Length: 126
Image 1 (cartoon, one colour):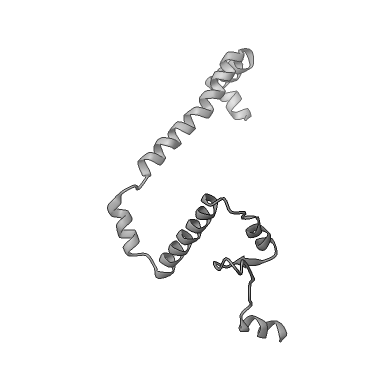
Image 2 (cartoon, rainbow, N blue to C red):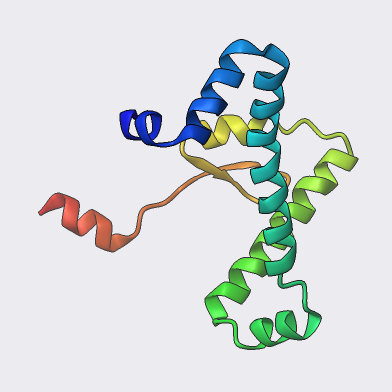
């Protein structure tokens, strides 16, 4: 900082102005906050790829596991939103998650523990 202070008259003027004038200080602080936000916003708008053709191409080239996860997430979201619309009590969902259990889609068997696979049991016993 001493290099700036010793060499730059603009820097010394800026420091003197912000020290001596509160309105200048708040104006300078506002400019330092607003200008990067505005520049960032416009950069995001320019680089936004909301192109329908590009999205269609990306969906065509998607891997099967990605498509499956999208389908599962859409189903889960639909189920959750349906429960909210029907005003069902969903606290048991959170209780089950805290216990390490998962909820089934069968309404009569609401909570089911997560089962471990045979491979995991064999490695744990060894």
